[in-house]
Amino acid sequence: MILDRYLMREILKPLAAALGVLALLFTTYGAARLLSNAVNGLLPADMISQLVGLQTLIALEVLIPISLYLAVVLAFGRMYGDSEFTAMGALGRSPARVMGVVAFLSTCIALAVAALSLLVRPWAYRRSHEISNIAAASLDTNHMEAGTFYVSSDGKRTTFIERRAGPGATAHNVFVQLKDADGTRIIYARSVEQIPQAGPANGSQLRMTDAHVYGIPRGSEGGGLIMSVRDLTVQLASPHIEPPGYSSVAASTAYLAGSRSAPDIAEFQWRLSTSVSTLLLGMLGVPLARSRPREHKYAKMGLVILIYAGYYLLYESARTWVQNGVIPAFPGLWWAPALLGALLIGAWLAPGFAWKRKRA
Image 1 (tube, rainbow, N blue to C red):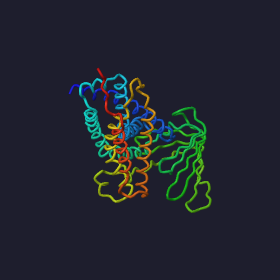
Image 2 (image 1 turned 180 degrees about the horizontal axis):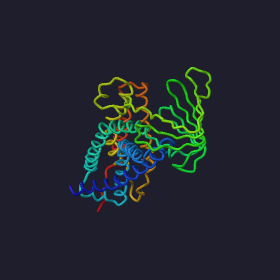
Image 3 (image 1 turned 30 degrees about the vertical axis):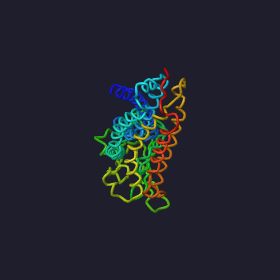
Image 4 (image 1 turned 90 degrees about the horizontal axis):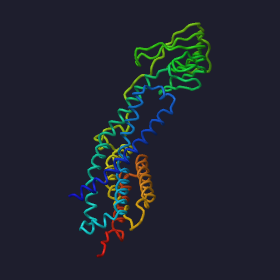
């Protein structure tokens, strides 16, 4: 039991480090990608942080398996390099017993990944869609920058500012295009100030000076000047917040289990298979970490990463093919984990796995 706890501790330490680094990198990349959209740059900080957090939460079902895989390879590679497994073999500790310890730890982690995929993943997607819809109604035009086109999520409102000293300052030479059921309105104003609003549901009020409003009726090839005023206050209606539409990634697992739609089948099989991939990857790290005496403990990291990259590419491709109906529900995407299992068996049965005891 002491050796079992020692093996688990040696795996958990690099697992925590790898997962922390990967989660940080993904969070940073997700935030940068989210903020690259000009409209998202106008969202409140709390909404942006929630969206980034939800994206990271969804990604854990992928980050945890690779972290476990790398942790086993790194931990066992070090132990091989320090001849610890040689000592264990001399004490009668067999490779099968070590694999049993890794299999137990991988199973526990696989159950956590299963909970993330089956329960947390759909909730996180639903919440992310809800926040995105709410955010569309809370854009603060005071933070719009000059020289950028800002288009609402429904495409019905486009705003462009030619000159502005900074956030909250008076905007000069402003163009606003509004689309509705009657047609299109184009508003130009020499200067614009935003009137503080009570809440996102009330929309924005803009006070314009030297404003000109042009109307283009629907179905008409041309339009004309509707009015020209020296001072005009315009109420910009916020986009109507509707419940998110149906999406396979946000549907409950129970619903997906009874669906016959190809996208639903692909999503359901993905959720079930993430835990299987976690278990297989954790166990695969054991034979891949095997090394010869005096071989550098990181000598096989290139092969290890290449194997994971190839598997993940096949895994994602299998889901896409099932989603598009290229592959039927059976075998679905299960052939990808099956190949990983075959690789595990082949690596385990490869010659030279058993530890060699030192001769006295």
